[in-house]
Length: 260
Image: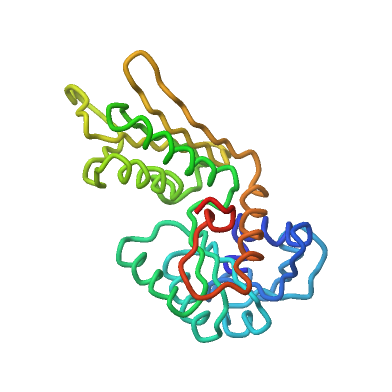
C-alpha cells in the first residue's frame, strides 16, 4: 500500500482481509511522521507486524500488486520501481497534469497498470451510464457536472469529476477549452457547446457527484453518493486482485467490471 497513512490507505489496509488479500508492505513519503509505525495499528485494526517505510524496493519485495493513493510525484517514482520489479500497479491518485499523465501511462508497456480516478464500483457504473446517456441524447442536451467533497480535499475539480467531463467532451466532440468552471457576473446566454463544472467543499463529505443533462421540457440527473471510504477501498482491492497475472498494458475499472 502506497500512501498507507492517508485516509484511503488506512481504509484499504482495514479492508484487506475482507477482500481476501494480505498486506506485505506499507509505503509513505520520506520524512513522514508515520515511518516506523505498524500499518495495522494506524489503520485501526490489529498489529500486522508491517512497519511503514519509505523504501519502495523493500516494500515491493513480496508484492503481487501495489495500490497507490499518494501524490503525482510519489506515484511516478513508485512506477519506476514497479517497472524494475515487474509489479502491477493500481493508481487511485489524482491531480496529475497532462505531462505527468503521459509519463505515467508510458509505464504500461512494462507492467500491468490500472488507473482510475475513483475505485468505487458504483462510480464506474456512473461513468458508463454518463457515456451511454450522452451518446443517446447528444449535445442538444446541456451538460453540467457538480461534485461535493470534504474540506480537506486539495484538488478541484475532483479526479472523478474530471473523468466525467472527459466523457462528456468525447461524446459531444468538445475539448477542455469548452468547460467552464463555475459562473459569475453577467455571463450571457449559455452557449450550446459548453459544459459546466462546479466544485463544492466543506464538512466531512466523502464524495458526491451528479451529471445533469438538461433538455427542453426534461432533464436527466445521474448521481452517485459515497457514504464510506470502504466503498473505494473494496473497489481498489478488487482491482489489485484482478490485476495480478495480467499482461503489461493500460487498464481501467471498466476492465475489472467487464464493461470495456
